[in-house]
Length: 63
Image (cartoon, rainbow, N blue to C red; front, top):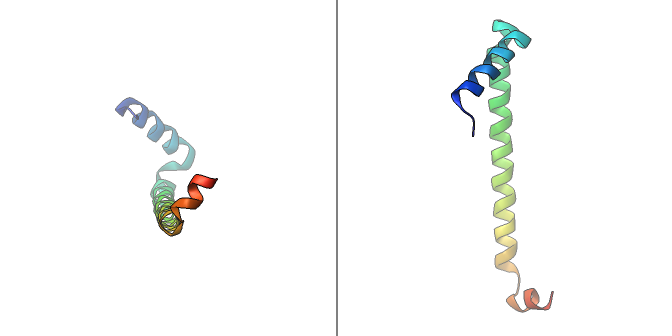
């Protein structure tokens, strides 16, 4: 769990590394990456559930 103190420290370090002009661009890129990651994880989860529904219960006991 991220505490407010840790969040402030991370923001200060990011500000020092990227500068105030680049920080919004970095935030947008991170947001885009997280959205893509979540979308792909949901796709994988849906495929796993679909495979589990299509698998014969007898096959599961034999494995």
